[in-house]
Amino acid sequence: MFHKLYLNLFYNYKYMQSDTFLPDTDSDDEAYSSDSSGDLPQNNNIGVKYDPIVNDGRFLDQSTHSHYEKINRELFNPQLRRGRICFYTNSSGSYSSIINLVDNFKLNSLDNVIGFELICSCIKSSDASIPFVDIRIPELPHICCKQNERGIPILDRIPLDLSTSTQHKYTQDRSYQNYFTPMKLSTLTLEVRLPDGSVTEDYKGFYEFEITVLNDTLSKR
Image (cartoon, rainbow, N blue to C red; front, side, top):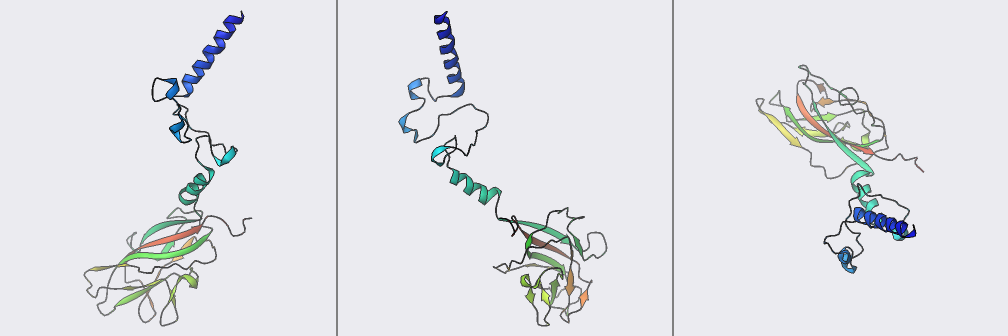
C-alpha cells in the first residue's frame, strides 16, 4: 500500500514538472543552469502572473518593478495625452465655423484640456490682395495664443498664396507649447480674420489641430 502511494506521488511530481517547464534539451540537468543570469526556464504557462508582492523588487518572470512602472508610465499611462482632429469648413457643402468636439468628433472626455495647437492648414485665397489671415478661437485662453498688432489673441497667422486658383499649405513652426489651467472643451468657434480685423467666411480651408489632455486632475492626492 505504501509502495503504491509513493509511486503515485512520484508520478504526479514528474508529470507536474514536465508540464510546467520546457527545457531546451532533453537533459534535466541542462533545463536550468547557472548561466541563465537569473532568467526563469521556458514554460508553457498561459500568461505570466505579475504579482507585485515579491521580494527583491521582481515579478515572477524576473522583470523588475521599476522597469514595468517605467514602461507603463511612458507608453500606456503617460501624464499627458495628445490627439489630433481634422476640420474642413465646407465639409457639409456650406461654410461652417463650429467645431463640435462631442457630437461630430465623438470626444466625450475632454475635461482636462491644457493645450491646443494649430498643426497645419490649407486655405484657398479668394482675394489676390490679401497676404494672410489670422485664425482665432475665442474659447481658448490667451496664454496659448499669439498677439497680433491689433491686440487680438490669435491661434496663428497663416500666409496665403496670392493666386486665387491655388491653395497654400501652412505648417506651424512654433517649437514651444504654452499650457493652461485644465478646462473642459466641447464646442469651438473658428474665426478667420482679415488683416483689418474683420471676420470673413470667404476663405474655405482644411485645418489640423492637436489637443493636449492632462491624465490626472490637479486635485488628486
